[in-house]
Length: 239
Image 1 (tube, rainbow, N blue to C red):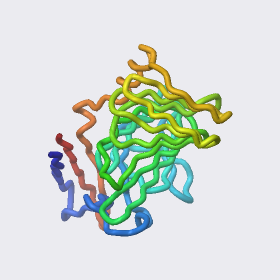
Image 2: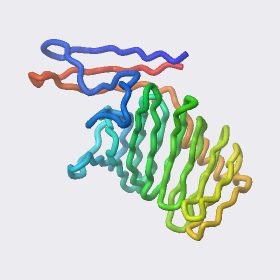
Image 3: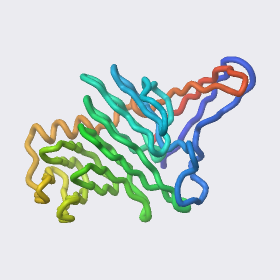
């Protein structure tokens, strides 16, 4: 069973916690405005984020992401995003995406829309009425709980799976293929879609991008109370 240990360190003033979403959102069709659905748990070099109706700004480790927020990485840069269910998405260099979430009752479905680039993923097993999707102009990858690597490119989208299986759908033709562990799915702008055994290079890249290290299980978040005093919140995710 997964447990979450919270340690709140008050740097000055009274203890105050803000911006951390509850484990189970209140029933609603969509999360309320500014509802946090994920965290930026790691930032390497040039990583930026953009909130709705705001300009791009430098992303910082521990910042929360709300539905509709965007993340962009530069050359030789990387960002790691953790969702509330501890699903992990690694945003590789020169990539851009938008995260969204939808809450219905106690279920929470997530979508990562990739405008271009590469993401590695380690998605926790979803509940029966939940889903996790990667979308692009060409494809939709519906994930129930698995790891792998998804690349969105104007020439073709590729999906390599290291465990479990993923349903990959082409948006143009609406045709789908089931991409199993050890295979790569290819979705083309002309509507064609196929699956084949993954190469050794593809599998190595997918395994590296989807692995969950011990360091990724620890988050440190800096918060401020109404008086402007800083607080440090440490979150330790345990399996």
